[in-house]
Length: 220
Image (cartoon, rainbow, N blue to C red; front, side, top):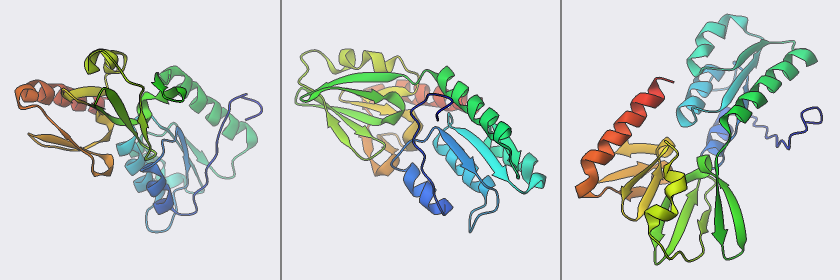
């Protein structure tokens, strides 16, 4: 942290289930995983993390070099074999920070009744327009309310819609396709069981955009 000058928060998890529970509420950018763990091994854990977040940087730190090939199912940034020296771990973490910097971490400056709140786009699960305000549902479980808006919902959210992770399936809703768990003809089910309706008139267009997104993400 001192050498990079970055403001970094570190969270430790004594059990893989604790990490998976935390992933339901928070977004982490770098994961350092062991291979040998109780119940779920590090390879399975990395695969589950990757399904939820295609952009996270995963590092393996383990005494088990024989699992290196299998570990690449989770597309890790590096595979470090213990004992790990300072130079090794610093080099790996520097690569992770560079990758995060390359992503640009797009944000949305949200005007609320308490001032401007800058929200990372990746932290948004969905947005709902209701009574001239927009409610932002976030991955940490919070709901943030915008100030009153006078124009159209789509115009207000145009900056977000430019990001290829977002889709407007209904005149009053916007979703982050990262967090889709189920796609039906009349609704999306998002993380946490949130259901967002799909306009019948827009179904074909919405379906095509979502299918293109899945194909695009699957190729990365």
